[in-house]
Length: 65
Image 1 (cartoon, helix red, strand yellow):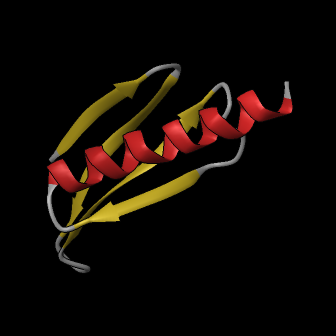
Image 2 (cartoon, helix red, strand yellow; image 1 turned 180 degrees about the vertical axis):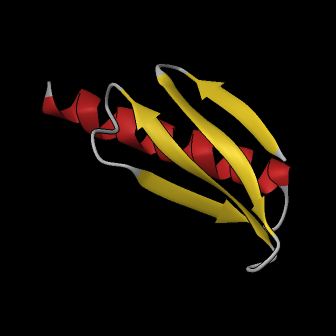
């Protein structure tokens, strides 16, 4: 199972790992630079972590200006 997630200029793909019994997504996009992985016990939890990470990243970028 793979679902594409998009938020602001970032995107990722949510995947379920049967081995680790969790969901994960990598954050890719303009500001992310390096790959960052977020994990959770549900798709909704991963989507929230994805968006929270991007919002934090946006705040850091805005402080540099």
